[in-house]
Image (cartoon, rainbow, N blue to C red; front, side):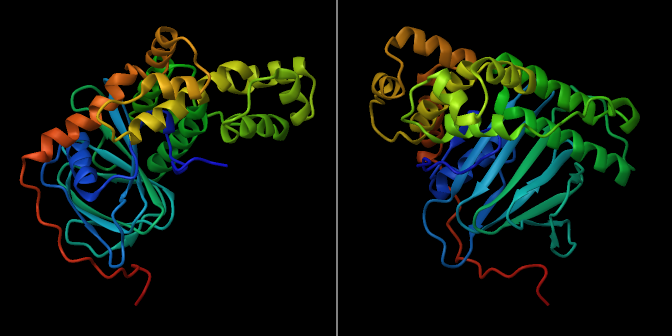
Length: 331
């Protein structure tokens, strides 16, 4: 049985899940650097707004928004070029005073644009924000062909992201992505190589990801996949860059991270969560956690606490009346 965290891009860098509107708004403002962003829920929406994951590097930041409830996000002013890529559902976008349009492919928003996003329930959008001064400038007349190549590069990156070996590898590959987004299509053509995973390998990966109670056994995993142990090992190493056990270990760490992100208790039971995931030595677990996610388990918890403390005494905008949802495709 799958856990309560939705399928989310960069799920190893989950920051917020099952958040209230106030938490959601505070997180978006902090991560985007735009204090006047606002969010309005659609009519009939509940109180658990959604989830988000984020990965920052010296060249830029990726933010994946998942809307558990339908919402409209306004006041998004880019301080640097921003790419927006739909990943699930039927999100919509409006730039400046233009009408709503379906966000069905990669869109590039410029600093002078002030865009709005409309996300129906279970929609997801990936936002890639270039870090000012850290990447080569994009030309203002960025072509459709250039955007098509950028979308291909981002899709290939997302194909690789579940198999980041650790945080250092994730940072390196992400920096390469931002660098290639600023290059011409010809310069980046050799970068995009995303073959489909072998179906036998997919069976092994799904077992590791979606059976949290399963204890690692290479012989059992190979039998489940329909290959020999030796072939499974080399198949996974060749196509993902990871060994079966490394992938298993990383997914156990991700389950602990998901519980820490959701933790609302005064004293998070990090040792309990670690033990439940099969980590018996807390010091070794903490070292592995930092190796994979770039921070200690306590820092994961503290990020959400800081978010709550930061906005606890601040006056957030009053929540407007819910919006009736209507698609841009409707007359």
